[in-house]
Image (cartoon, rainbow, N blue to C red; front, side):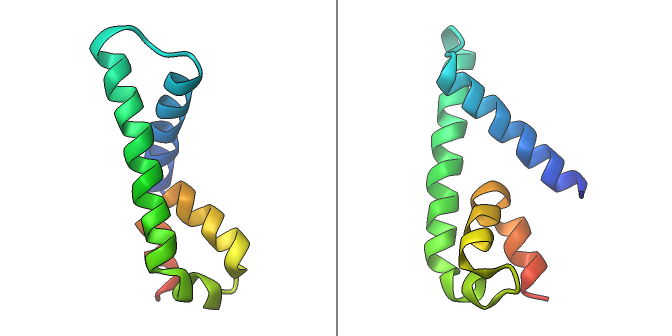
Amino acid sequence: MALSEIVTLLIWAFGILNVVEPLPGFIGLIGSAIFWLLLVAHLIEIIYFSKTIKNSEDGLFKGSLLTLLFGIFYIKSIER
């Protein structure tokens, strides 16, 4: 697993944990913003790159899930 994927998973974990158990103050707002921005950005990527994802060897479901988690890092790995 690449460093970029590990960092992405850590950021997702921080955002999800903050949604489940909100942190107080400014850090809580940052955590919520991170979660929602990642979610919306990656959903847009799934829609925009749906043809590329569908044509990948992972298939539409697994490819969409990996795009939701890793975003453009996954897309770049299948475009090679």
